[in-house]
Length: 141
Image 1 (cartoon, rainbow, N blue to C red):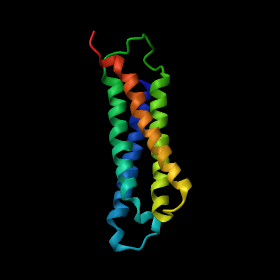
Image 2: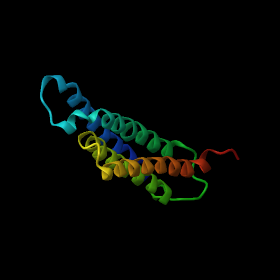
Image 3: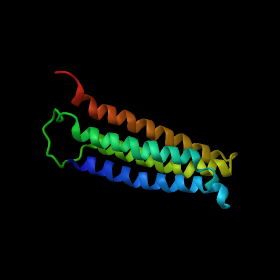
Image 4: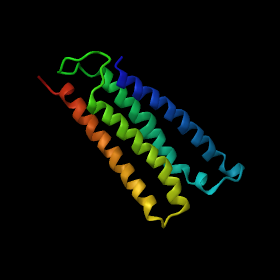
């Protein structure tokens, strides 16, 4: 199994655990009082679940299972596009986890909006990088 696949799958499992913890906190809202930022975890929970767990698992398994890369490479070698995809996805997700509750608590702060915009750009870039990395492996001969 390639290193990048292991990175994606391990990160996806960590995100699954975080998403389940957030989901539990969201379910417990009616039973206990929580700080304001925790009350705004709904969108963050969905991002951690869908981008953190589902998307990373898909990216990792796809990079493992798609046909061999057209360029000869060692099984455990890391490729810059795949690493950039991993980094941008996780950095964008981290900024999203920080920015969404922050926006809910302080909606008028411009810097917080910038964090969310940068997060969205990084996540979009990760999808583009994945597409560029995977495209040569799935095109016809």
